[in-house]
Length: 427
Image (cartoon, rainbow, N blue to C red):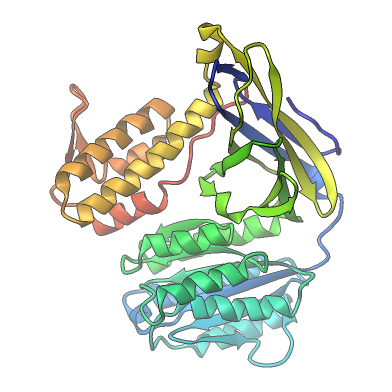
């Protein structure tokens, strides 16, 4: 079912609404799609871009620091003139180095030159405290609460100079203030730390092997940010009395669990932030548990609304019909099955890599063999290719063996990109 209530946005629900007698769980994939009519309806009043550069001592290695500088300059070139921007130096402290004082400047030929001069004065030293860096970015964003704020965080190291609880609290406090894309360069960082930041702040995570590879990546991230003109959409989920939402997950273009981001806004109503949008479509897996009814009875399991500001701009319905016809109830929505498999694929990759690090090679092999099979079945060629850098696959038997010499970066790239999903067409 789709409901294009507002021109330029649509909400579609894919599911098998038939449940076996006594079953209590309903699954649906909700596709939200915006086009140029909706994305351009109300131009963004103001934009704010914050680039957080790891300036710790380890960034002096190889070409990382030079690459970070060049990438930042390249990203600034992608800014639309008039965009507010700031550069934050990250060590065991955090400091806004451009502008060094006073209010933020707007992107122009003159401000870009001044920012380049500030970058030229930076030198790598000190430690790594990413929560502190986020806190500085939040202070910057707080000065311009009406602006659509986005940050890029680059690091090459672990979060060694603050307690994990501090980072978690800074992520929590920064939610809603800005979105954040995270990048790791080299192999000295912890992918899970970057994923936690990116997931908490509705951004992406990826890794780059060398500093020279950062330029194209920063350009792409900034172009994507400039293409977003809708500051925030919200998924509002109503369920009937006695029903509960078990989870809400973005499943395409990447997996992002939104379940813990639920905000109760009324009786049986919860809202989940979807972040900033441009012209795009995303898929969400919603699972609801509800009281079973007698065969033949139909219930509304959930009403899914997409909200912009205070206005409902699209809506779809998730239904449940109980039946004793096993042929009807056994059918599984192809999209639900596909994305369930994609989530299992990501978990199998992460569990397998974690087991390998702990020296449990039997579990690692079993998990990664499962991942290879799931990647092949779902057509996720990206993950399949990355897996082959870590395991050898016997094409005749399908058995998997861990490679004897695994490149550290290949392993980290597989981990970081495990949440990128293969899309599946709408039914």
